[in-house]
Image 1 (cartoon, helix red, strand yellow):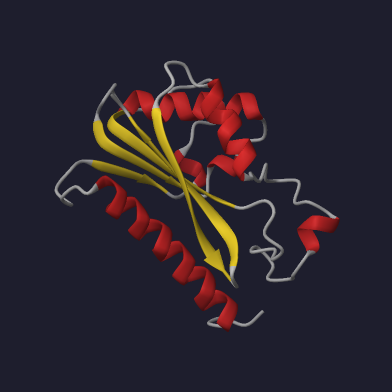
Image 2 (cartoon, one colour; image 1 turned 120 degrees about the horizontal axis):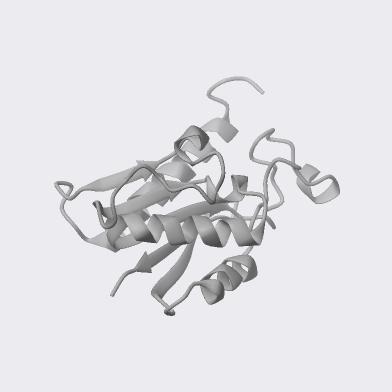
Length: 162
């Protein structure tokens, strides 16, 4: 796949829409303390480890396309709990839709339906609902999506703390 192909541009536009969704949902000025996690190296090696931040250190924590790199439901719940620990107002999570027909990593349609990528625990809406059901205290949350090619390509989850 060549650089700057229509697919690269579409994927970049989708990512920008997810980031815009975060800023629209928070409705807050950019001056707030926001931690945006985009690199897998920013997560602890073992999800049982704590992130190197104090409780409520950031107003918002945004985690883009990383929760699907955590390999089990239990570890994903631990990650959400850790992100909620360091956020004062809330957490924003984005993830690729497991059921989207386009393999966004390779640009080859339908491949992840035939042989799912082993490195990712890709999520669908029902998986995200199960994660929320596993969190203590039943936090206020909202699930949204963006589309690529008319199909839900990416989910975003906003969790607001009381």
